[in-house]
Length: 376
Ligand code: SF4
Image (tube, rainbow, N blue to C red):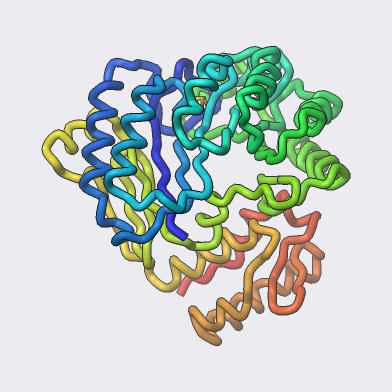
């Protein structure tokens, strides 16, 4: 399965916790669209004619783009890639952009999945995060999307904001469940380096994030989603049966994908490439018909570690048969040895030939996976 990701590096307002590549200035937007179209053309042989099955336009905030800009991007893709078998076309959107008019205009494209950045239905959380939308807009965006015929909706939530009680967090989750949103992505608030949030906390102008609160709220999330029939198919992702994100599943299962736009990553056959994380440099490079990317071949150890990290985050877990086949007996024996202490502490379990994270282990998944990495 082949997938394309496009990064749109513009947002209306900077969220305090965000460390993605974006700009709130729209000055470069026309030049960016031209550069993106040029990149699409220059990368047209990436899949060598293989059908593209998933397309994901993320960012940044893709919903700030006008319909004519989105059509221009999609037409360029259609000229350069085989899109006849496209199964999933996701567009990320912020609630304040999802007016009825905007949603009706999106119907001109074969978008069949919306990923809405709700984050919270509470004013105090939205203010702490410096989100641009209100709780009312968050509710309306979901209702408007439904009215416009978008049923395949994913909503993002963030937990662990200081001041968010467990009761408020339960309300956020239940609001989505009651709306019948089929897919929920929920992330613990993390304080990334060089973000406004890190600065404000350091200066005592914002309360710090508590790991204990995050762990408790992750537990509430798992329990509520499970009770209401949502499958916990990846550490941060829950869906009603069958409503997985096909695009994200392809990342987690090591399928090839092409990333377009500044800061986007691509992967194919053990080779990883990443575009420059600067929109002006990205535009300038493409104006000279140069791809603004760097690449590296993953060593067997790097690809093993990547497999351990991503597979342990999924409900399917780490396939030990696959490890033996791809990396040999010695790597398998090392992994099994390092896993013992986690199995003894009930943070990992072994079922058939798979290593799985247990409910208690899930909140610690990334740390456990890192400890299972091979260093030679
Ligand atoms: S809208 Fe998304 S990408 Fe933009 S600043 Fe906020 S979190 Fe970051």
